[in-house]
Image (cartoon, rainbow, N blue to C red):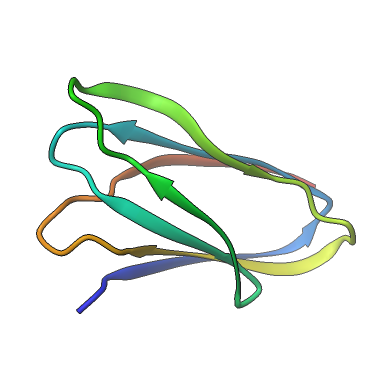
Length: 87
């Protein structure tokens, strides 16, 4: 079973993204924007590296958007430190 988290926001003009930790206990994450998969991110690293920008997206139209992150690696962590939303 995959665990997911979603962030919804209205009036987004651009997205300056997700910061996350890369670490040995981390796995892969699928990123979907408005229900469409746009990226798969590998958060695994041999040594921990915190607050790394791991994904960025610019929207072509302002409005309500939803970003969904789904952990694809059973038994591994996927930790998001921050999203930066500019509107």
